Image: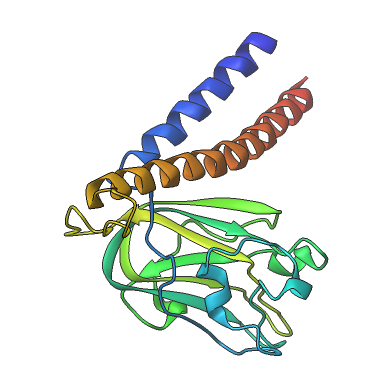
Length: 224
């Protein structure tokens, strides 16, 4: 039985790895510092906080977004043009109220109306950090929504891993006085982004695989 479960876990890992390869250049956080908006704003907790690279998951540190309590709240980042989206990483609020994000959906598409764009799967369970597979969906807007009345949407960090179309070499300029070349800085940035994405993926994937193995064990136990 243990051998069968191990083999099942390996198949899951291979399947997820194959999905990640469908979006070329997926190591770039294409949502970083892009314009963001949301359905409403509570006490100055603007939408841009989710894409400013400040990942502290605490409301009292001024690093998380916050909508008012409303029906079907949403958040959206504008990528500037239609881009390939591999995965979306989300860091939830962790000082309290993490359950408010329960059932969230991730949308990718060219319609500025978040709810009219395709979703990356369906409703998702809330956790401390989530990595949602979008499997190469393309769109200018990446959005996150909640369904229902009296809902509050709070996001402490959102990372959109994808492919920047028509990006030219030498995008990063050399820093004065460092002697570094533009391409050197670009390669270093890509390497850092790749390592960061890998850490996100490994943590999220480990949780997902364990949940699926647990569900399989329960199913097998019920068949006895």
